[in-house]
Every structure is written in C-alpha cells, then in structure tokens.
Image (cartoon, rainbow, N blue to C red; front, side, top):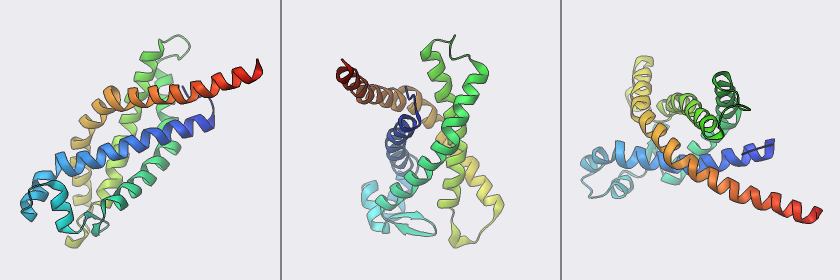
Length: 188
C-alpha cells in the first residue's frame, strides 16, 4: 500500500473521487430522492433537481457539479490532514502492523477512517445543507448533524469496507505495481 507521501496523497485522491460521487448519489437518490420528487412533482430525482434549479447548499440552489467539487475539496482536505493520519494511529494502537495479518490491519484502518470521517463530513454537511432560510439555530444544526451521521454511517461503513476500499486498493496496486516494475526493469 502507500509507502511515501506522494503515494498516500494519490491513494487519498483515488478514494475521495469514488467516495464523494457515491455519497452525493446516496444523499440525492436514496435519502432525499422521494422528498425531492414529491416536492417538485417530477418522475425522477434528476428531473426534480433540475426543476429546483440545483441542489440546496449554502442557502441556495447550486448545480450538482458544484456540490461534487465542494464536497471533494472538503473531503480530500479532511482525509489528508485528519482522516488518514489518525486512522493509521488508531489502528496501530489496537494492532501491531508487523505482527497482524495485512487484511486485518487494513480492515482496522478502514473502520477507523469511517469512524473519523463520517462524523466529520456529516458535521460539514450539516453546515453546507443547513436550512438557512429559516434562520440559524445551533440545536437545529446539531440535530441535523446527528441525523446525517445516522443516515451516513451504515452506508459509509459497508460501502467502504466491501466496495470502495477493495476497488481503490486493487486500482492502486495495479498503478503503483507498474511503477515499481518499471523501476526494476530500468535498474536491470
């Protein structure tokens, strides 16, 4: 897996690209899809988003691409500065990476990352998607945050553990193995 800072940054980039798209899709279609369609009277979620003029964020409707870019920047920054370093440290507190089977250690890192990133990104989302038109209330913000964590945590845990991380690790190994093989071929 990642062995230096560049590889860690690339691994985080690959993970965040897949994860942000998955979470925007999950949030729009699974969590809020029926509400969006009932409010607008549209037959599809995408039609409802278009009828509303975009996705509600920052107190106004923005196009989906703006939502994805905003969440990507926030998620990547949080992953690189907090998520990855802390999840590795937490996994090392429970398991010794030299003596633990790599699959078990990677699973511990994934679980720790979800435990850190889900509440943190849900808090950011509570600010981003807060109903500012109704005025600001800290209790409403906290209630929205807890609601988002309850919606997002099961999806985050299972999608990261069984889909996203295995996919990213496979892609990462394929890309960086070629790099290592090319370096070996040049040395030979």
